[in-house]
Image (cartoon, rainbow, N blue to C red; front, side, top):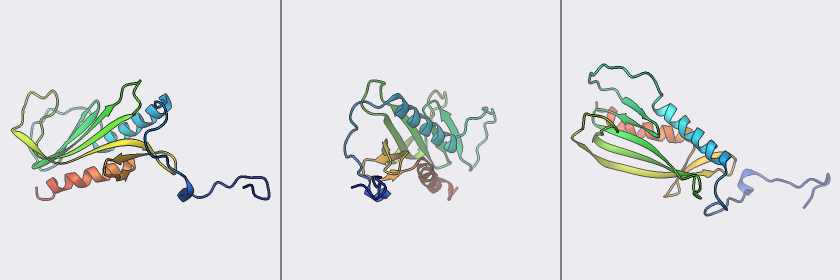
Length: 166
């Protein structure tokens, strides 16, 4: 198995065996921190934290509201919400990310103004997993995998259906 210099060949990315099923043992603190950094990065792309302004005007643009563990992207006719649900520190999972596309107006958590209601159009639950090339990917139940950047682009695409006709 060794080459002429006594080195063991590593192979290409397609030669890497990806374990199927849950990891052995609970995630490490380092793994939890990596996932939390990726969640924060996703939320920063979708709804950057900024000082709240008190102007209560309606426009056709997207209102971006940040929560401690998610965000609401509200357009005139629909919305996209992204919510992070971390597992307990003793749990075997890192947590799950829920992305929901809504028709109508979504009420923000803690808001005194309640909307008339919104209907779920599409829902996706993603779990953080190791990537074969290193790093982390978000994997949906249907097997689709997203990097943090491609997931942000997917959320923007979901929101686009509510903004293109506005």
